[in-house]
Image (cartoon, rainbow, N blue to C red; front, side):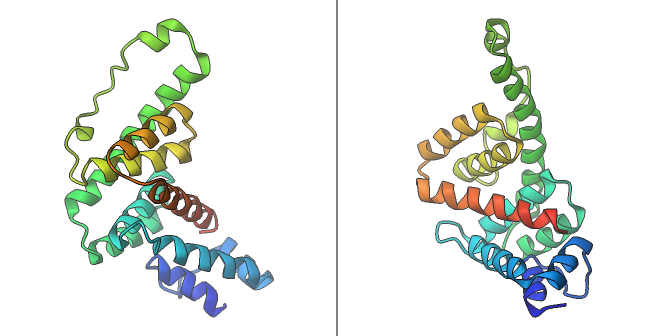
Length: 190
């Protein structure tokens, strides 16, 4: 296989010796897409508005959301090497789980748009949102990215505003969303 594929896997802490049928097929058939994907992953993980640790934690959130065990393992190891704590990594797992519940619930409310559903309390406990280990701004940023993956318009709108209210720039938000999209596109091939 190509050096580009090896470098792509290295970006997410996976040894070049590992094989992934779809990625290997694309690599053998047309190196252009693999080259683009490698550049996109590399650039997204090094976005100017995200620290290395934040970028890896967001990539980990994508992996957890997609239930992709191999990248969960590799990105957890990489996050630890970039200074993430066990508590921060655990919080990312909890965040993804909570957002999956919220995204379904609020997407339903938005789609149906009936007064009863819109005024009834959610009844979903969210205590980890009150004092997150990762800090409010980053917790909201990660919540925004998971909501974007899961397609909850109501949650995306709410978390985007909350992230800005906590001091994030639109450039930081866009970098996080770009990273999320690119990591999800990579996971499709692994």
